[in-house]
Amino acid sequence: MAQPDYAASRTVDFDEIPVVDVSELDTAVGRARISADIMAAAQTSGFFYISGHGIHQGLIDRAFAASRDFFALPADDKATVQVNTDQRGWMGQGMTHLEGAKTHDAKEVFFWGWDVDADNKDVKAGVPMVAVNQWPDAVAPDLKPQLMAYYLSVVDMGRKIMGALATGLGREATFFDKAYAAPLARGQLVYYPAMTEDDRMAQRFGAAAHSDFGALTILKQDDVGGLQVQNLAGEWIDAPPLPGTFVCNIGDLLERWSNGRLVSTKHRVLNSSGRSRYSVPIFFDPASQTPIDPADFGAVDPNYTVVTAGEHIAGRNGRNFKQYQKD
Image 1 (tube, one colour):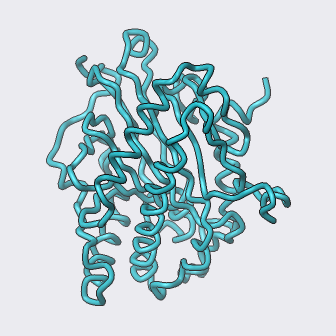
Image 2 (cartoon, rainbow, N blue to C red):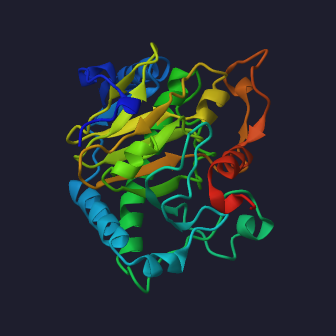
């Protein structure tokens, strides 16, 4: 299906979003170069691809296969783990209406996060965004093991990227370690059906223009494409899937924490391919009670007040997802 007029974009050489090879991130020389490359992207486009990440393709393939199998289930089966206000479980179409969008997004989502049980002290205390995952074991027994294997590998990689960002922001590479020992690290499986004529008439996107709520997003997309990023001139450019890479972008929380030095950029998804699209983003956010204080990175007269990570993310969720909203 041709791209609709309301979603006009231009196709440009993908190196407007740089590719950073992170294979030498564990070496001193490599860390300095990679930190500089990531910071250059984080301060301009806010987006970058990473290659040389070391995550086995088999883990990725199995996570995507589990995603396709789950979304192919009947709605009644998926609804056994209906999304709750802890942002865990399955959310059907029509439940996401992003701030400023004309209509809801055309997508389904399965949400999970750092795996804790009901006896966890933060769960018992009602700490924002710390919750027990809802796994559909009765109808999709492979989902949890496949996703958690993938998830833990991405979390390990995310910690290294945060170390590179810490160095670039003038702190030790270990600065974020405490905040990411047991992170929120919210995972999503996202299914975007092929665009329909009704979507076109409603000017509906798979995901309307938005910036991400959290710190760092680490996205694996399939080969369909559809991700578009707003550049500094206000134009929408394509961020096509590149084999062997993940797409990373800075979120609002890290822009806030850095006092605006790092840029959280608007982006959207338009699936005009005529095919189903699947993606698996990990929103790599710190522990809920982490104070997000721009003074950590030298801000003397900060543009933002201090807030905890969980409070910030829960507040944004409440304005964008229907399960939080009262009729």
